[in-house]
Amino acid sequence: MVIERTYSEEIIRSIVAHPKIYPWICEDGAPSPENWRPILIDSVYYLLVKEITKQNPIVLGLFAVVPSTTSCVYQVHTALLPISWGPLAKQAAKELLHWVWTNLPNCTRLCGEVPANNRLAYKFGIEAYGMTQYGRNPKSFLKNKKLQDVILLGITRPGV
Image (cartoon, rainbow, N blue to C red):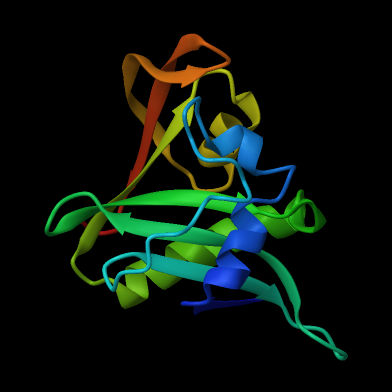
């Protein structure tokens, strides 16, 4: 498995706007999948995940890693395609942690925010990333005209 940075708007859009992903990661008021565009700036890391095969690499999805503070804390946004769901997705999360701890030396904490109704994403954050819940942001995600809580997850760099 390989994780590599991409700046390709086309590749990023094709993954994030996938019909099995986009409905779960956007809230009311977000642009339609066709109109969604990534923010392409140097501080945002779009990390493509590929499985290397004998024929061609298979794109499994991507992670967006975005600084929350000028140092220390980064947010992770996960967009893994259905082809990766299961053991490959868990492996990808472990690879992402390795990539972050290796390539972002100032990152001491990686966090994620999961709408309370997205139980699979919550479970993935706990089991695959090894994150723990550190808080809850009440009524902060509008989906289907209903405010939902957002669960705050995080993991600290080993040895910190």
